[in-house]
Length: 492
Image 1: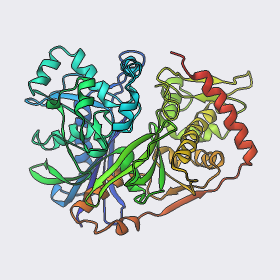
Image 2: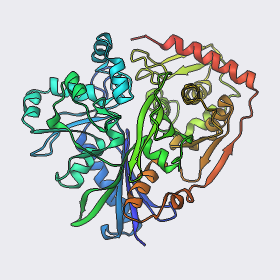
Image 3: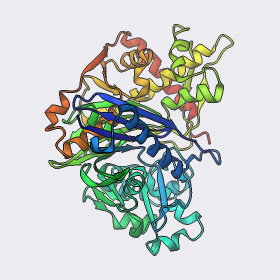
Image 4: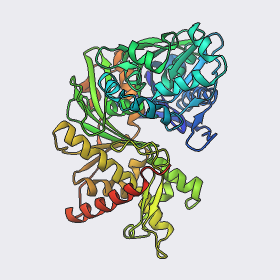
């Protein structure tokens, strides 16, 4: 049976997963790579290491499945979205490390743009807020700070891309320089109304058109990957959160999902209508498919699963990320301890680039268990803040929240999420919905799956978490959380 391969290039690891027609993962491989922190608030990746790990897991997954590149019907790509790479067209060598979406070095640049009164213009054209999160200020920083880069860019010698473009370039041996609409919509350079790079925004951010990739649909063949001499169509590309929305079968307006990964990202499908947020959310492109363009409302939480990594690597209070649930369960509640993981500032709905992480409510009775529980609860509280803003923007009350990502396997977290939201949280059998969404887009493009209905039929519930906490207790906890967030704001 032919298979579809998803390349899932995330913030902390590269993965490759082979899916069959039932949407079942037949084989997978994963490899972590370095996180580089040159200065406080700066986060970088080595693009060559990203490509090496992604290529490595591609071949490892094939070997595990006993498959050959000839067995692949298509490849789908999903990726950390705003991370920015600039490389030489002639050699394919990056001119510097990639600037990661979590990086805050361009926050002063964003302050200047806001002070110049440009925030409404960017919001209208891109659906985004002026924040260091997005790619536009990152590519400008690279062109301004790498010797000779700006002159070389104007001569057409350099290429810019988010990680999807970097992977496509390498998979095709440098023959294709392209990005899909969902990734383009995260750059501060792409006009989501006109469907093109915006000359006015390019001028403001001083980014020459010569470095930009061509923008293609999320579903459709954009080139052939060369794997051991075999040509395999690259037929689907979507940023990780849009891919997860598709993998959760949220293809109709009003359906929403929350992905618990390094960050937490809640997306609501708004169909063909680009809903302008009044509550500091993002209006983003969900995907472009043969039927047309769909939009989504998004709330971005910068630190979610990464706070568990910090408990492991920074504090050393757990040996592995999986240990956090058992440690949190050693205490019946948070004991008044609140952890605000604003390690990279606060995302939606606060958008405070100068917030920093805090732990409040500590007493002599506080234990490792309380800190672990507060870390998990912080993930749920941040998601609840985003969902409240989303419901106000869209004028709806969500009936349920579909969840995915690694931390969605944590029963304690999922139950607490249902409790503070007051709505059921639904976990599917396949948590790898980001990779699955990329596979579905690619497979639909080449006829591996015949229709959306066939794809939706693969979505199956693993567990449904019903709210169990009294509403007044949930409100009390959220009020205390709001106080803790207030302490974290404007710190740096």
